Image 1 (cartoon, rainbow, N blue to C red):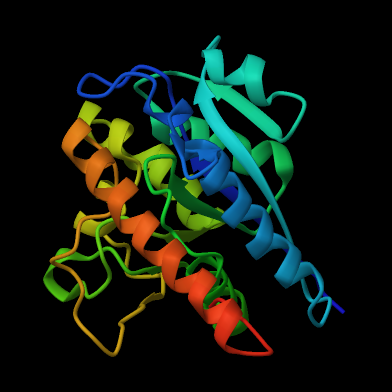
Image 2: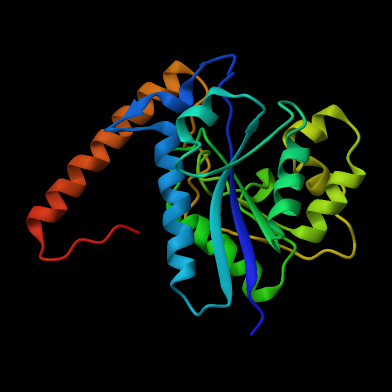
Length: 235
């Protein structure tokens, strides 16, 4: 049996211009980055307990010397690289781990559920797609904050070798979306409802306050569900 290796790579850094250190801000008992790591690791764990044909792990990709390294270096694998050439961070992590697919999620999405990550990974690995995402703006249905991109190793290598503009090096997959190669195969994940108007990622202090309120509301409903029923499952 051929086992496909998947790396869930969380893009993170301390230096945010609008909300510095947002990764370390607590929301309902866990920091923003701890929540994202938890969901990534939950997705990897679910996949690793599957049929055995896909092996997944999670990591951080951060700028060299970032304070995040000191706090999380003993908890999760970390790859360090250029602060602004984020594409090289992803490419190098993919190369060093020898993975077949690398997943891009970002540390400003504390409400990203594990099952969304898992859906993207299994769609890519089962059908052999080079790029699977829910982020294409013209057909987007997911909230801003549920963004996931799964990229095959060969497409990541192509992007790394092709992208020359600073914008494409910083934003990783803009070169893939704007110049998708003819040899590659892609798929888009579409929801049954359109929630694209909802913003649950963190860029500003206002975003943070909204998410704290939003999360508190969900937490109350979870507590209520636990009291009302014998079983409780969160998708």
